[in-house]
Length: 204
Figure 1 (cartoon, rainbow, N blue to C red):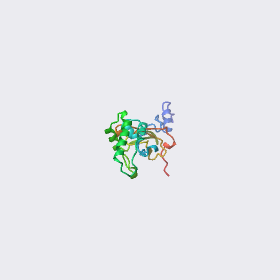
Figure 2 (spheres, rainbow, N blue to C red; figure 1 turned 45 degrees about the horizontal axis):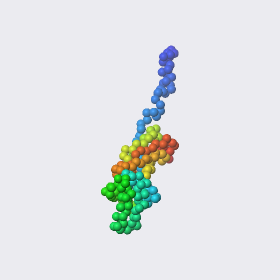
Figure 3 (cartoon, one colour; figure 1 turned 30 degrees about the horizontal axis):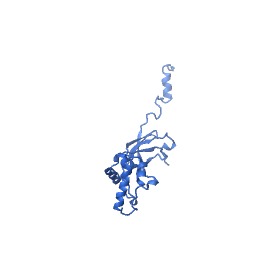
Figure 4 (cartoon, one colour; figure 1 turned 90 degrees about the vertical axis):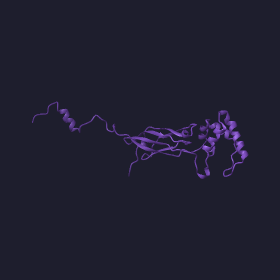
């Protein structure tokens, strides 16, 4: 039997080694999009007694601290009772005296107040629109997040969860605006460096 020529030896060795490829395993793996579930995000400060002050203040174009100070001069009617007409006028005057210097008009105050008015005892909520987004998953791990619609009405950052990734560490950020449809919207999701929790849960 004639020995293999030197020019054929490297090819034979490659075949015996399984045809090694220059591409790294997983390098060209497809990126999957897994829907994000947003939950909560409607908490308020205890001192605000259920009022979505951050949303109201943003819609009026003033800092939350300014609106809170203005509201200290207001005397709301007890829950479940009709407000006295004179008290309503006095409360309106107190708010306009404090907020008027920031350019807040009577019409704008009425519009914003009516938009975010809700009845707590009926487990109601002010107008909200859910955010929509997805997680980018490659090689079984979350590599980033994409927000396709920020929604509106979030008074606090909602919780971010991804099916199959119980330890996903993405954190939502909320932006505020004078425009109702953009006020309290999820503006981005901060992607924390991948950890063990960012890998899919094992099936039994």
